[in-house]
Amino acid sequence: MTIFYRRAIINFKKNPKKTFFYNLKHELSGSDCLALVLRIIKFLKKNKITTMGISSKNTIYWPLWYLAADACCKDLFIINSLFVDQLVDKLQRHYRIQYIAKNLDNLQNEKGGINLGKFSKKFSNQRFVIKGKKNNIIFTSGSTGFPKGVIIPESAYFHVVKVLIKKLNQKKTDLELLSMPFDHSFGLARLRCVLISGGSALITDGLKNFPSIYKFSQTNIITGLSLLPSGIEIIKNLLKKKVNNFSNKINYFEIGSSAISEESRSWLKNNFKRSKILHHYGTTEASRSFLRCREHKDDFK
Image (cartoon, rainbow, N blue to C red; front, side, top):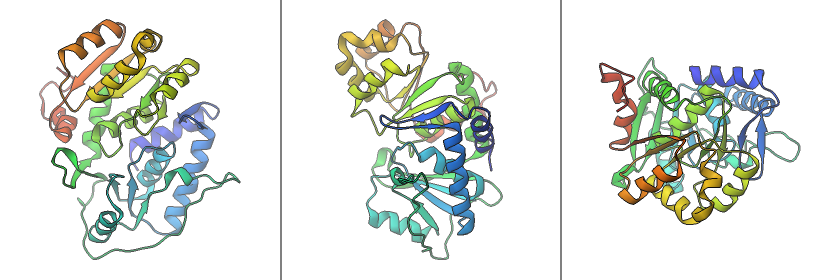
C-alpha cells in the first residue's frame, strides 16, 4: 500500500463526522469512507484479486475503489469509461486483469451494504507490470484517439503531488471541484492532492450540470478548481454576472492540457484576483513527472 492509502485512512479515522466526498445528491463522511473501503478490501482479499481495473467515470465512490485497490492489489489499471465493452474485455484478457469495477454508482444498496455484483476471473497468461514496484497503469485515448497504456510509479506521482500542494497552498479545509476524468493523469493527480491534504472534494462527471454545481457552491463553499481551458469557457458562459459570487471564494485554480486564449487569460485575471492559478500543458504524462529530472525540483515555472 502507498502513502495515499495510509494518509487517507488516518484522515478518515481522525475526522469521522467530516464530509470528505460529495456529489450533487449524496455525501460521504469519514466513518462512511472508512467502512466502505474496508468492505471493498475484504471483497478483494476474499477473491484473491491482485490485478484490478477501475472504470474512470467519476463517481463519489471512485476514490474508495482506488484506495482499496491501492491497499491490496499489485497493479491497478484505470480504464477510460468511454471504451466500448468489447475493448474493455480485450484489455482484461490481454493484460490479465482479474476484476474490473464498472458500475461504481451502485456501490451502496438500500440496507447500507455494498452491492459488488458477481465476481469472475478471465485472463490469459500475459502480464503488463514492473516487478517490485506499485504502479498505476492508465488506459486512455490521449491526443491520438488510440488506446495507450502509461505506467506511472508511486515515487513519481507522490513527488508531483507534494509540489502541487505546496505551490497551491492546499489545506484540509479546502473543498475542491473534481470534474476531470480520473483516467487523465491531471484529474488523478488532483484526487491524490485531496487525499494527501485531507481536504474534501465535490466529484462530478464533467461540467454538464454546472448550474447545479453553482447552486451547491452557495451552501458548501468550493475553494479549489481544476479544469481544462474548455471548462473555463463553460464557466464564463454560464456564470456571466454571477462570476464574483463564485470566484471570490476560490483559493487555487489548476488548469492543464492546452493553451488558454488571451481573452480567457484576461477574464481569469479580472475575476479570480485572490486565487493562485497554475497553468501547464504539453505531453500529459511527461508534465506529471518531469520535476524529478530537474536540479531545482520545487521550481515550477
